[in-house]
Length: 135
Image (cartoon, one colour):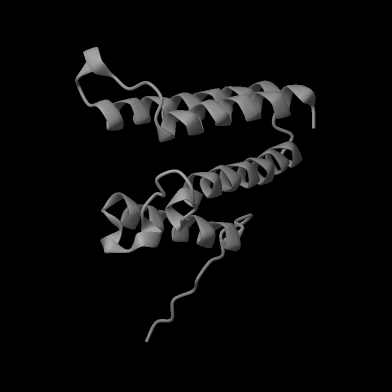
């Protein structure tokens, strides 16, 4: 019998990947009605549920991922201009995907700011600030 050799991906932070996967599973449940559980529904105004924490958790995950990625790219001697280009392209992709997922083909009544758009704008903003400031 052949044995499978699991190759660990170089530079992956498994705890972050696990947390990201956990958040994605929770997000699927929240977006599908939460199965009737109160804690998988957004609180009306006063209060806090698990559903209310998903967006900040994803923002935190994005920030940690950026720090790890930028460090690895600096160690590879990648130029800042190339990193800036990649940041802007990735951010614009998030914004574009968010626009089409949220709005479809109804261009006359588009909702411009949604979750993916916020991620894209934040990614570009933070990436540019970090790379230009030189940290």
